[in-house]
Structure formats: C-alpha cells, structure tokens
Length: 355
Image: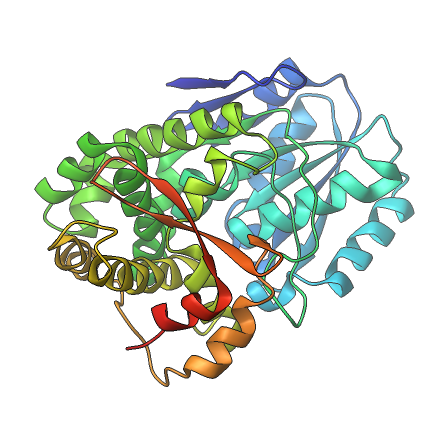
C-alpha cells in the first residue's frame, strides 16, 4: 500500500508493507544519493532493529552511525537534542547528509526536530515502529520537544522525504503500547472516517486488530491525516481536527508527569472528557460520550485518571498551542465521522474540566 502526501512544496510517499523494514536499504537509495546517515533511536528499539537497519543501509552504500538515547517521553527534551546535534557534528554530518528516525512517536518528534535544526535543516526519513507513530506522529511534518511547561512546545513544521511503515514490527509491542496507538485510531474514525469507526466496533479487542486489521487500520488512519495535512500544512484550519481530545489530553500528560500517562491514553481521556462537556451543552449529540467511552474501554484504554485536579489541568491548558489570545480552539464531533472547531474562552474551558 502507498499513500502520497501531495504537498506542493514537498510531496512524499507513505509506504505500508509487511516486511518493509528488510527493504530499508533499497528504499532509502531510491530517495537519497549515497551519503552519511545518522539513525536516531531509543535504546529499546535500537536493541530490536538497530543492527538490521545499519546492515541494510550499509549494504546500499550508506555510511551509517547510530545515536541512541534512553527510551521514554522524558528524553524528548532540549538536552537530548543537544547531544544529538553534537553527535552529528562529531561524525561529520553535512548539509548533504541525512537523519533516519527509527522508533515511536518520541523518536520521530525528536529526530525530526534535530534534522530540521541541525545546520539550519537537513533531510530525514521516518521509520515508525509503534502503532501511535505509524498512524499519527510520523506523518505530517510536525517535529518537537517538550518543555517543563507544556508538551511539544518547541518544534518546527518540516516534512520528511518519506515514511516507511512495516506492520510486522508491531508484534514486539507490549499490550499497553499497542492499546495506546488505538487511541489515535479511534480519534481518526470519530473526526473523519465512519467506516473506520464501524470497523473498530466489529473488532473483538486489540489482539484482533493486530492480527487481522493492522494494514487497514494504519492505511485508513494515515489517509485521514494525509488529507488534512495537504489541506492545512501549518495547522491553522482543518488540521486542528486532528487535535480532538488533545487539548485536555496534553494537559493530562503534562500534569501527570511524562510517561505516567501515555499519549494515546491521555487522548482517550481527553476525548471522553471534552465530549461529556460538549454533549451537556448540546454541542455534540446525545449519547455520543457513552459510545466513545465504550469504544475506549473496549480496547483497554482509560476514560479518566486520578488524582484529577482541575486547577492544575487548567494551568497546563493556558499554554496549549491552540490558544489564541483569551480563546482556545477546541475540536468537537457533531456526528461520528465529522469534526468542527469550537473556539471558547479559557473561563468556559475550565468548565469542561469538571468531573
């Protein structure tokens, strides 16, 4: 399967194919001239796939170096980026060379940010190995690192030269990591693809999704994201639809402590919470919160967490990137398969945080 992200200034393909990781050398050679490559990966993914990727890229004629960092959201910070910049300089990476992001969402965001800022920007590729990264963060060109104030506060819009997705690598995910990715899949169905939503309803559980629906789910989710990215690359209009559940979700991630609540888990919590508030105000249809909660729980995702501190969450929300002056652009679902932007005041947003 292949999808084209047909941006006028920087088009690229998303390749979705079982066993694709073994072809990374020939795939990269089809996109890049022979050059130096720094593969950026966390210690867990590097242990699983680093040697294989290094071997295949070397066979294709590339000079390859691996920069490894400790796995987890806590590593997606400026200190890690600085170490990566220094590593690239030490191995002699120039503006004609490239970076490969090998890993989950943390790796993709970090590696993309490093590539987009090293020597004012060099090219890079995305090789996502988690479901969250395959269906969401590897596509669209958002890069970023966290600050102590908010998630992804520092970053750039920089598109990769390609995305290579191998569903087979999902077999190595533990149950929690697999479930986390389903949070983003549920979101895609809710905002833009009722068929995807209905298909999720037909599945038994996360294992059924992994074994029988992985390629379909990845393709459908990437296609949702591809369409909104092409329409709104810089996140000023319809691309905001992708943030359904994220306004509250990011606040949950930040206040709980990075890593304690995973991204997809926080999105699930955020979708349920924002829907509850919107439904109570007649902005989303009656009963939709129950449907969303049941889907979230079906795949083992949380619909809330403790301790729930409205004041702390509200403080985190004030730093959300979707804030414009005294307003914040929330995303609602007027019916399953559609989305709308609903600007509200910060004072009203506080009301949406009430349990």
